[in-house]
Image 1 (cartoon, helix red, strand yellow):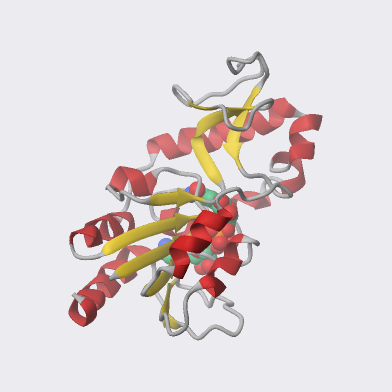
Image 2 (cartoon, rainbow, N blue to C red):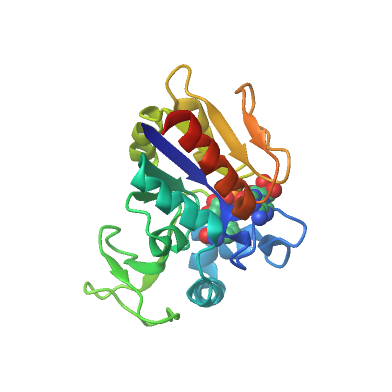
Length: 228
Ligand code: NAD
C-alpha cells in the first residue's frame, strides 16, 4: 500500500521550530516581503542571508520528534513517501527514505547564476561573498514567494499514486503546494493530523484533532490495523 504524507511546519513545531501562521509564528517578527522573496534578496541580501542563517542554526539544534520517527518507522510495513513543505531535514534525520522538499532545503545553497548548481552548506552560515564554482554569490536553496515550485510535478505524481494521503501540520494556505491534496486518485482517503481546523475546500477529510507527536502514533496503529 502506498502511504503518502504531506507535511508542513506543524510537524516540526514540537522539535522547537516555529510555524508560519500560529500566534507565536515566525513571520510576526518579519515581513515576508523583507526576507522571503527574490526582490528582498536583490534589495538587501545581507538581511535575507541573516534570516536564513538564524533558521539554519535552529534546524541544526533541533531533533526529529515522535511524529517524524513514526512516519519513518511505517516504512517497515508500507511504501511511504513524504512530500514536505518544510525546509528542515528532520524527516531525513528520522530515517525517511523518500522525501520531496517542495520549498527547498535550508542546509543547502545554490548558485544565483545556475540553479542546478546546489551545494551543502558547511555549518550554519552563508555569507555575502560566498561564491559558487562559477563565481556568483550563493543564495539559500529555498523557494521564495513568487518563485516557481520546481518539485511540484514530481510531488503531484507521488500524490496521485497514494492509496491513503495524510496531511500533518499544514494550514493548507500556501499555494500551489496546498493544491496537491486535489491530485489524489478517486476514492483515496484523506486524513489530517492538526490541533486546529484546516480548510480543505470541498475535499472530505478525517480530522485527527491533536498534535503530531501524539496523533501520528495513534494514526499509525490505526493504519496498521486497517491496512497492515
Ligand atoms: P503553517 O504555519 O501555515 O501551518 C502550520 C499548521 O500546523 C497549522 O495548521 C497549525 O494548527 C499546525 N500545528 C501547529 N502545531 C502543531 C503540532 N504540534 N502538531 C501538528 N500540527 C500543528 O504551515 P505550512 O502549511 O507548512 O506553511 C508554512 C510555510 O512556511 C511552508 O511553506 C514552509 O516551507 C515554511 N516553514 C517551514 C518550517 C520548517 O521547515 N520547519 C517552519 C516554518 C515555516
